Length: 293
Image (tube, rainbow, N blue to C red; front, side, top):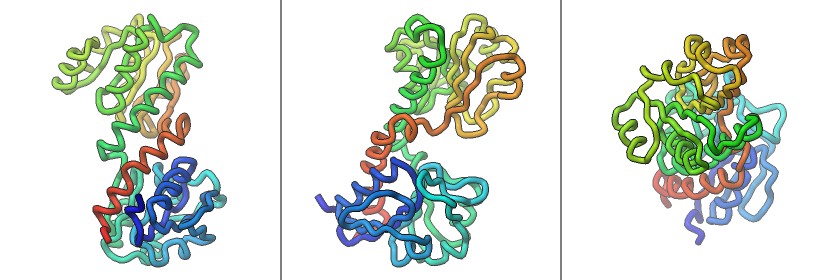
């Protein structure tokens, strides 16, 4: 059903996720102007320059990771990576929606300065909950590749019990890992207990580390510090799923000989088609809500 007929949107940069998204937007009837994406089909207009891509569009879609510290677009297919500047964004009409997975502070400030409407997709439950599935599967895959033991029967901890933490803890439990959830929110701890999982408050964590095989961190704050690292068995594996710089003292972990891996953004790496279809499922509704016809 071509529910987006009459809409013109720009999709700049990205990876396999955005390729899937562009295809689905075009299938829904939108005219999609692209920059740096290897996809050609009816309704898709490849552009060579950012200025060309933004001309006459009603919405701008940026990659899920957004931009780096230099304001360069994340792009798997384009070098050099184009920069997002105030001059570039001034081409857009005030109030134009700009969709991005996560917006760093400089990008957020630039959008506000240009009176553009920011939509952070990863803050939406309908995206983040579905995205937690490939995140959890990818995290378990990483653990299976690195541990000398099976997940079945292992002692696993999940730090944080938000959307990703819940899905990950459920998956580990289903694989018969001895799974403990660590959180601060009493409601989250109660939910973990109701799901048949062990539950600990962060204040108790230091006393329960001597037998842990793998720790999955989902908390985007310093939680695995030097004190906790010194209490861990040297064979413990840490997989940190939080956004960079993560929640682990990686320098100290390296000094102690503990393997700690920073692994944000797993959906786009381990299941790009699924991650792209999640975006394609949600973005058309957002465009209709923000732009309409």
